[in-house]
Image (cartoon, rainbow over the protein chains, first blue to last red):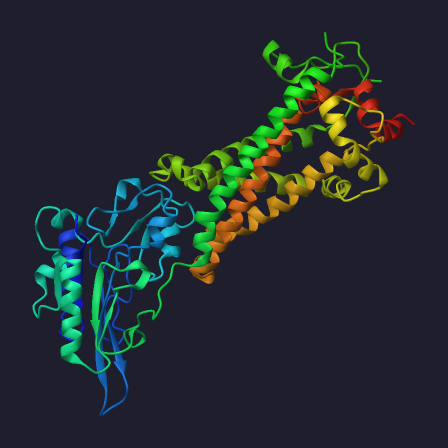
Length: 260
Length: 233
């Protein structure tokens, strides 16, 4: 099946945060009590109950102050660090290309939280006992597999969010970037194998607080792709070596025993 | 001179597996004190729990067993039991604990000799070239060093993953997990060897020294001559 994606056009976003609210409403996520920190941004960070958050950045100084907005949620990477490290298969790639999440399978290990190059997954629960559960945007898998739009897309008043075939949206994003000109760029086409949330930005990614070259850490690859086969190899050598010793020693060595 | 006490009701199956314990009337010497034996078995049980639950997280094919999170909780409990008991043992008799740890660090020419003689000895039972050994033979010293070294690695990396929080970055966590799993691989193979040797024909009956504390004088004299000569003086 063709990959699906969300297109977020930062130049059209008004930061109304309707998407944040729609996400909470559809996914049944409770509100969080916060304090006024002197910013329209709220809550302060993503959490197990906030899967989507609008981030505000002030760039430059008056009279040339620019106020830019970014959508912060799971990017649904093709080379997803979280899927790579998840031991239970709770995080997986859906047929539509995005990173699905099966909450019932989560072990609470927290590996995904640490391996994500975008610092997105969060867990709720107790760090000390280890009874906890990760959470993140599922791209409304329950809605899109039933021919409905993701909740955030459905609610977006200025049409800054779109949902559809990834290839179509990518072409649209490029066309839009050509229209805007200047520093405008598409973000997510090739990053971490291609994300399933594509951005139209009109400045460098860093201006929006996005990593310029997001990458899954080399340590994750060494841990998952190198150490695992080594482990199997060492286990095989151990078992074979001990087995060989047993077969030979059993025949060659006469047991000295004080027992009856 | 003590003689063997048959307090334990051992099943014939265990006799087949490990060789029979010293028969009544056979001369025996004490090899492991009661606190050491309790430490060993508490450790062994905690180790099995840590090993099995850790396995679920490390080996993707068994990841299904980690679902729901019970294994993560058990892993933490077993870690606390293992480290806590070792700490209690240390505080209970710091002198003995330090002496035990130092035993593994004392290496001499007979240890080099052991390394050279080990293969013919453990494969074919040739003891002519095997030099006399102390209370801990060279293999046991190696096992002890691996246990202490890899154990420290597991405590540090496990502790960082558990309590590190935001103080260690995601990168720090992943490195800790990588090192934790390297420790897992090392401890797995050496523990297999450790358990295997308790069933090795050359060491028939030694299992019972960790059970009742006693080993036959003949075993002590043939396997740990330097120690045996010392305690017989």
